[in-house]
Image (tube, rainbow, N blue to C red; front, side):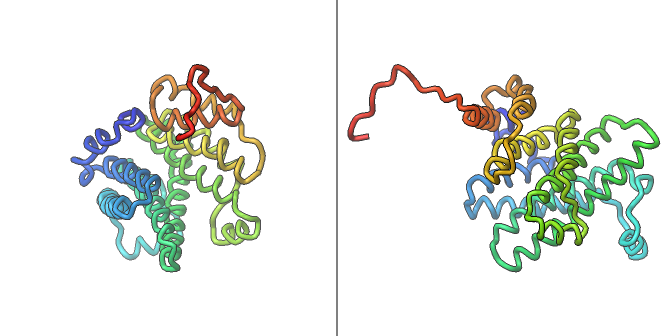
Amino acid sequence: DLFLNNRFMDALALLKPRRNQSMYHAMGYSSILVMQAGMTFEPKDMDAAMSSLGESLQTCQKFRKKVGIIESLSNFFYRQQAERLTEEEMHAELCYAEVLLQKAALTFLDESIIGFIKGGMRIRNSYQIYKDCQAMINAMEDKEKLTSTLTHFRGGVSMGIGSFNLMLSLLPSRVLRLMEFLGFSGDREMGLSELRSGAASNSLRSILSTLTLLMFHLYISVILGIGDGDLKEAEALLAPYKNKFPNGALILFYTARIAVLKGNFTFPRDTSPLSPGN
């Protein structure tokens, strides 16, 4: 709420004290720094975000299931089963995958061969963890009704799997076939379906699923020329956030983008003409 109300420093101050003890505080803190680095591209912001992501991975690692060499080899061939993990360990897997994906995104900005290799390996690892989390939640849904905290887990899985599928589906067909050969999935309809499920889940990551869908409808589909964005869906997704955060920078940004695509331009009527010097 603080972040969406433009109180960015207050949000960081709230998260900072517990970022070394709580996986969600750590992830939230580093995520804000990553967004800041992505907007400024300043070296100091990039370094701060990368350092925070490294600390967040360490914090998440504390809560992940501790496995020995034999079990590690077993997990290499057989995915982890839901009953083998506690609920806290499941959330730790999800947070670890999310932070790892953010770190991969920043690594790609390094623009070096080593940076691309590191980024690719991190993305592959992140995607595999998301797939494991998806298998866990599917197994549990067959057995019992989700608890409130597992609803947040399910929303995070939908966001991750949906984002991966949607973004990979935008790659050229040759590249997509190679990625699928490597174990990735690039199903656009599946991606949109998972993101819609995540946006409607009323979970901690609902806003992230919503922002990803808005980016696809309002920018990616237009820029890549893959069809007109669904403005009706975009408006419906944005409506509850416009009511709750009417002055939020992100909300105003996407509201303006919808107006531009609909051709709703409003010019002030009472302004005086610009002087020649301006």
